[in-house]
Amino acid sequence: MNLTKLKEKNIRRQFNKKLSNSKGQTVNSQKIIQSVGILTTDEISSKMDILKELETILGVRNVKMYSYRKFNKTDEESFKHFSEKNINWKGEYVQENFQSFLEQPFDLLIGYFNTSHLYLECAVLQSNARFKVGFSNVNSDLYQMEISNNLEEIKSFFTELKKYLIILKKIKN
Image 1: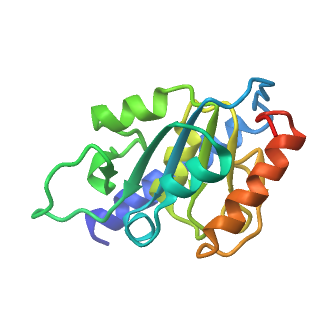
Image 2: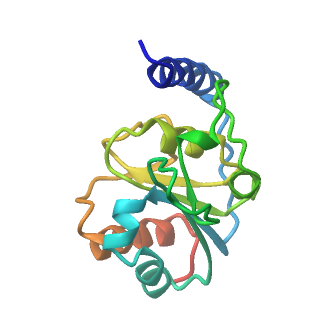
């Protein structure tokens, strides 16, 4: 077994432990959404303009986004990306910029990925966001609200999200 697989196995164990400890500890805030964080992959963010769609449909302006991209020695260090090298064996993120993103108390965090992804799921779990939304087929224990939708139908996803946020009185109509 190589070190990467061993590290992933250890991170998965730490993730499952933290996830089971956090069950039932969610705090639902009645606060109107003003700040939004998005976690996604580099492949998704390069194909779609998630920020533009979100700002257009929900009408929010304070949006920050981080994308996961597989580590490559030739890539420049970016303040909009993180990789598996930015997480230690304990499942804690060590890149300062990404850590400050996770510590930020966003009113809404959107996990815009529709398949199980260890590093993105760890980031969602560690985020201090007040309300977390994601796709329904990822991990139901991570989110307060899940939307069943195709990843490519970005307008449909955000329209559905807006509908439920209005019902929950988190945004104004």
